[in-house]
Image (cartoon, rainbow, N blue to C red; front, side):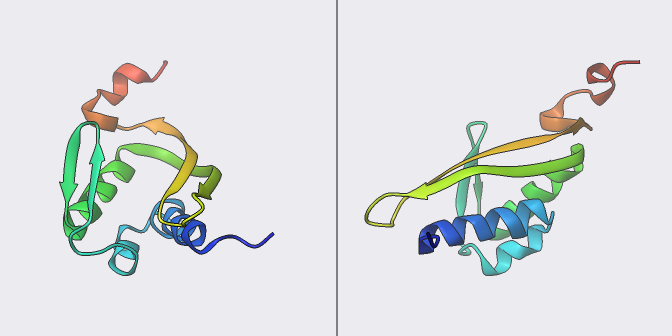
Length: 103
């Protein structure tokens, strides 16, 4: 079965920005007034999002982003995606990377 258009857009976003680790891909995937909320903080604008993605990626060594499933509602105006991020802490969310590594 072919992917639905909204699902294709979401999965392209996951692939180009996160799996390929390319924050600049947001230039052609999100609007300038894009807003995403993470950890209760709003990241407002495409440029702020790109900086946030770069900092996020820098905080996890051996970063891997795997899409588990993505689907849309009947109207196609809402998409839900379940994914998993793995890697090694390098200061993720302000934590101390040394405290999270075993010796």
